Length: 358
Image (cartoon, rainbow, N blue to C red; front, top):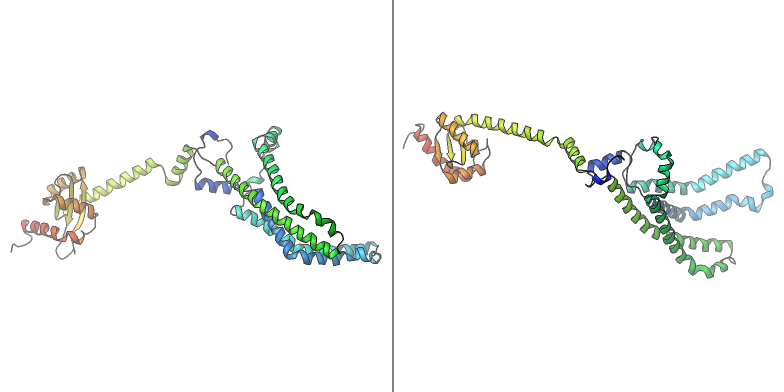
């Protein structure tokens, strides 16, 4: 991606967003060895499927040139018609094989990365015209690595082919004594053996090269710690701003909660660390509702507001801690606390004269 980045600072693994941006700019994992393998596989399948019929058709088309060349007209019109006829037949014969090869080439790219449409790679880059840059590419580390890869590939593929041809060396002379059909059959069998051996060796070469290309792709898209922070800020927002917004929302929620304390029926305290304000209206609410709760400074503020508003404050440390943990603001208390809270509310209502003593 950016060539002006300091490689020594790129110590962090790339994020998915960075990888997606690289893909959009045409920077993808692409191994030429994988393409060669898939093309070779497609060609082998094409020969296996269409090879025999194509050979027979080619023999029939070109038989006239060998069996009866005297029948071929030599005037320009006849030669033009012959050329058109032969070209059309060649296209029909070779077309399926070429079509399968083209499909294999497309499949080779799809196997390595999802489809990408970008014109970044088509933009002129004057740096590529530099003799110094070209010299570095040819004789730099990348150039030597490519040379070594090529030599290794030649050795591996050559060894695989040799293992198939060497045992057949004694039968090659005998093949010449066979009929044309026999020669074709022998050569076809040998061709398949060579293709299979080449495919087997190319599979390991392609797998190793793909892993290498994947490693280089991740390496050139690594990010610095500052880039990670910038991306997080762009996607998730500035942490300081988010923290400030969160603090403002929390402060507003506290203000709304404190404003509900004067409407509470009772405040149950720890007595100093916890405070839970409950509201209950006989016949209107099914169970007491938590209108405010807090610990430490907020608990102190709840008690102060409750005291100023004349809301009864009851000290019950176990119940205060249990309610603070079990219920949220604007929620009814859970059933397991009904009995304990009912006793307290009943006591408070008696004190305030809202319930006649039995």
